[in-house]
Length: 429
Image 1 (cartoon, rainbow, N blue to C red):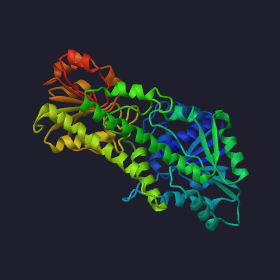
Image 2 (spheres, rainbow, N blue to C red; image 1 turned 90 degrees about the vertical axis):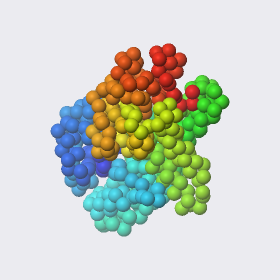
Image 3 (cartoon, rainbow, N blue to C red; image 1 turned 90 degrees about the horizontal axis):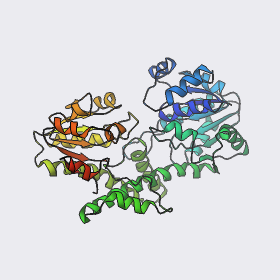
């Protein structure tokens, strides 16, 4: 099928490339001229393992192209995926102005049937609004369908997640839309959840909110573990082996970040408010997450006493490993908290240095972990990159002013670290 993807950000580009990999002809469209030129020149606008190879392969095969000409994309495509940004407004509600603009442009441009698919994370009833907008803007009563197909892609493993999904959710109103969606996703051989658009829209917000809740829950448990002298890793293992619960997302740490979880929690709270429900549970999930970053700074202060004039080496800046995404990264609040206490901060990340430099001031960016630890009064591990798990800890210790390791992701074994002569602080241990 000829498919257009409007919006070539993380979701849109991965979607377009993977659809081409499935055998469809895919056009990735964006109004960012620089981004499209980068893609045409074989450069990726962000770091995502395996994506460049997939893009190069499908461009060479003639199944994938990039353009800023949305009229061309609409004309050439039977199905159009809307994958533009839905950033939060000040009140937490999603800004859907770009979604509306794309829907209007499709309606005004199309001359034959189109299937319009919401791929962006949007509030419930957005599909209804898209349909209403298109009915008002279309010419000559051209037929179309609107459907919802939420994404469940994790940054750092997005290509794998698309090609090996737990499930594909499709929300539709007509049998024609259903048939087209099944044709698009048939090659995946994955479980497909068929439902109405409203349910599909809520599935996305409910999924992200539940995962966020699991993270905040285990972070709250980690606080209790510290107070009780227990080990949160063993607690998580014991709880997670219950098949009703599962071990995934039960890792205590400095809190979740990235664009999806914080944004989607606030948006879902706002959606609930507009529908007449006070979602206090999710408000508490957000509060616990924010406090976890403050607790981490307090751990550093507990060991070093006064932070003024002390040097802290921060390992990891991206919100998670295998990405360069700094949006809502816990490192931002942690570093700013250390700076506000008068500390000097040195930092390193394998992929997110360029992005971090645009967001952080008064930070010394270093070439590697050992340069970051040089003359540091403490090293704070914030993002669990595999590179950090393989550190030569003896070498790290020799370059530090004092051997203090604050492990925000519980990467290291406390006994091993302490036997090497480090003062060690983990999360809930």
